[in-house]
Image (tube, rainbow, N blue to C red; front, side):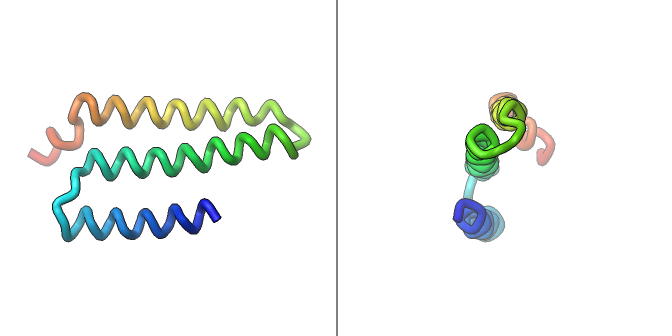
Length: 84
């Protein structure tokens, strides 16, 4: 269910990014939150139902690193400087 919602949201955001005036930073932030939500959900199920529950730590770390990288890109305006 989460993946279907994510794909629909990706399509809507991509359309708005191309044909409407939507900030690239907003697009990146929403994209990151959706991907991180999937990582955290996967970590939950790895922790609860997997034979190797410690792999959930890696999934959580992956989500946190992704959030950190995107926040740094937004903070330092890397994409806006590349397009100018």
